Image (cartoon, rainbow, N blue to C red; front, side, top):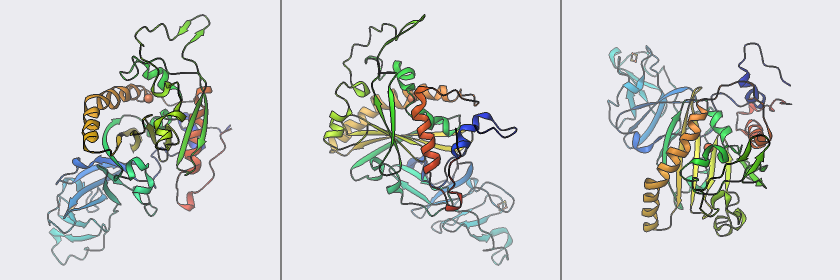
Length: 389
Ligand code: FES
Ligand SMILES: [Fe+2]
């Protein structure tokens, strides 16, 4: 068993053992805002602990380090003073930077011939406006093609359309991602959510079989067996009699199983739920025309932006209208607010420390191992994950 280094937070131990960084994996695209939030004014965001200013000018998007190297003022307080040039000017003394290269193109108060001009460069970031979201690449490696790096439900906007929203959680991103590792919390925490309230209990005490996806991007979990109620010696039955659960089994409790669903049979979707690097979960419905992607975006050590990206298959105008109405009137409230908030309250209350993992954590352990061992890193950092035994 690896010993914690002196003064190290014991809560870091499982992540250090698997080489999963506190601030997230750098060499991936991350959604940071919805497209509508970035208007004419520059906007400051934080991603993986880095402060970044985003702006639009001349129909293009730019992302630069949000700190003027002159005397340290945030560029996000500045403006695009020279429209159409792709530049942003610092509000303090007017140093003006080119968004495409990060180069200082003018130090306004020093005059046009200032010797410092073009000798200073700040970091610029790859940025995209795609599927209703602004995406950033915070890593040092050459960026991948965004469309290839996200689930098809987001990447192929010809076949699907996405409706994103997000909520900020006051906790580390790894708490969210662990929450998606099939630890059977859903059967416990969400059993009284509006979506599951009238449904029969979802089976618990399952056997979980994790398996890596053939595309190498993540994992799926097969759930085997399980019961919907059990007797606990000295306590009684769980759950207690719940007369209001009058609905027929459906969803995960579907008696026919995912293999017989339309999603699998008609659309060939291999798994009902998958987790992907760098930290997202993809949950498909049995009818195969809708999938939710929840994406844990590390903002800093203690803040995570949870993007709920609702994705719908394009099946014509009427269906699209129905999907939107259904989202606004039901799912947006029942899932993205109430259901997700049930997790948020708990994840924000996690006190990092030593863990006593149990049978239900098989998925979490496998997922941590997978992340640490398979995350994209520059070749110089491509080390084997440390032994956890
Ligand atoms: S601090 Fe930015 S121009 Fe002086
Ligand atoms: Fe949950």
